[in-house]
Length: 242
Ligand SMILES: Nc1ncnc2c1ncn2[C@@H]1O[C@H](COP(=O)(O)OP(=O)(O)O)[C@@H](O)[C@H]1O
Ligand SMILES: [Mg+2]
Image 1 (cartoon, rainbow, N blue to C red):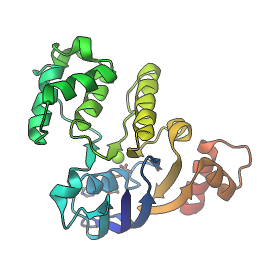
Image 2 (image 1 turned 180 degrees about the vertical axis):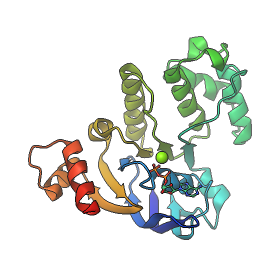
Image 3 (image 1 turned 90 degrees about the vertical axis):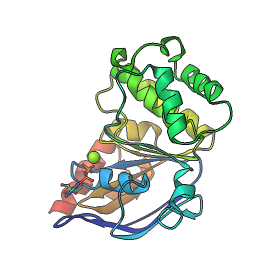
């Protein structure tokens, strides 16, 4: 569903992402983890079609994002790390505004209501976003990103600042989306979240993918029998730095 081939991004001096290759299947939840500055946001912004790669290719559902951006982007719901919400709109207004932006056709109001209900925002839909909690905002952003019914969700650090209840809600949302066949590419530095919900995990360090696999695979390759993901992560990123 999502294919990255030798994806590379160089800023003036920094090689932020270095020949990253990956292939994600439909219905897969992929967790992209790594320390600060590893290249997660840069990768996700390229996937979202808002940052141009220096080299390499991205395919979404077999369509090249660089050659056919409009068609490819239609299959992605992109959620940046600091999404912009209009404080003076209500939740419902934000949904219809986003639907207009993406050219969602058909029964926009019905789709918006359905998503708001699914994410437990229906009874708050006429309140201004400025009155929403961080968790409600995050759910609204995810709901809005689903309006055009994308096949893949690309989301940067969705759990930052959320309390445990909100984290659980977002985890359940992602699990439910994956059950419906959506592919989820999620960056996080919350290792327990990755361990809980991701089918596979990729560890990026200094722009390079240094490990890829299930939590079990990663444990074995780091040689930490019973260790949790945190230990694997420390072990692998330390080895790289040495
Ligand atoms: N716009 C930019 N200009 C120059 N360097 C950047 C820019 N954005 C990110 N970088 C650098 O690229 C590297 C990767 O950053 P980023 O993708 O934000 O990492 P992460 O999301 O994993 O914390 C870092 O060294 C960062 O300083
Ligand atoms: Mg980041």
